[in-house]
Length: 110
Length: 113
Image (cartoon, rainbow over all chains, first blue to last red; front, side, top):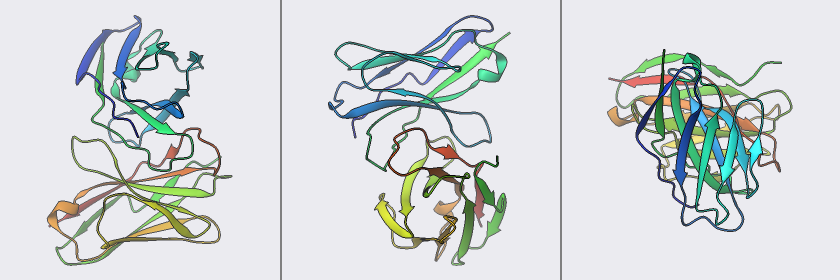
């Protein structure tokens, strides 16, 4: 699976959009981009995934660049409960080894 | 609808001992993956079980073994515990053939002293 690069930490004001970047320059054509988050003392929570088109669900939006070498997770109206570590993962759909990096620690401030 | 259930939540063991951790997958899921998460790091893939067999394995020694039962629940066994095995052990379930997100349990916190 392709390796990802994320900033170590980010801050966001409550009510504002949080934009979390991820670089995956070596992504292969059959690899999807997945996002998970982990709130302190809990297991990771699935957020969203996509292949090449932008995706949106009730939690977030995923924007993937046309060359697929980077993506951005957008939380449109961040709340204090969105404070967590956010992981960007790329993996082939049929690869069972989902590899987590260190992630981005997002802190939402009042 | 119950999610992924792991037991116990916390455990303290002595070096050299053996430990068994348990996981019940989310209803409708048939695949179980195990992860180890050391403090301050991301989860590391140990192995995955499907149809009662180990389907894929990460870079972990043979001291780590597992089992899946006909009801899809799973156990993780670690023999000859080392201090470095202290970590949060996470179980994730999924439905085979779907690349959608895994559902994780809250984990078992293992401390080896």
